[in-house]
Image 1 (cartoon, rainbow, N blue to C red):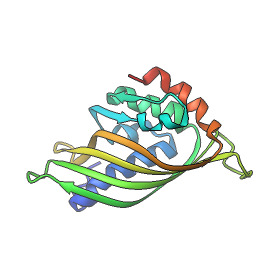
Image 2 (tube, rainbow, N blue to C red):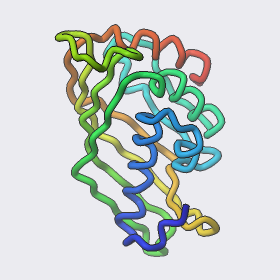
Image 3 (tube, one colour):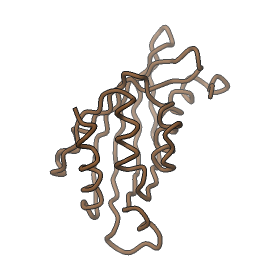
Image 4 (cartoon, one colour):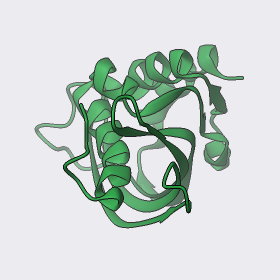
Length: 168
């Protein structure tokens, strides 16, 4: 899965692309490739929704928890506005970007019915490390900030219940 053919900026962004494509495709192997073994995935900023999201710690918790909660949904995550800052040694990076994320309960994405989805505009922020052995960047810390949302919050009620088991 080496990304050495990409520029450093593109390789760092690829970790985010792998993550959201894995969620949209419910692909555990691809999602695993986006995180270090000891990564954290912070969903605490979602508490404003009144749902119980928290801090997921460790890739072995992050991957099954995200896929159980969101991977089975009908989703699309569209990414933009990537900014990266690479350390002077080229082995660590900080990333921010935005996503436009549409979520439907499983099987309800098509045909669209007004009001049955949940749309979010999010800011992603994370710290990554270069896995030199495999030639890919992986998140060691990821935070999801919801900037705005609209639609049926109930879409995430099942996701919040699934998240309970993986939450720290």
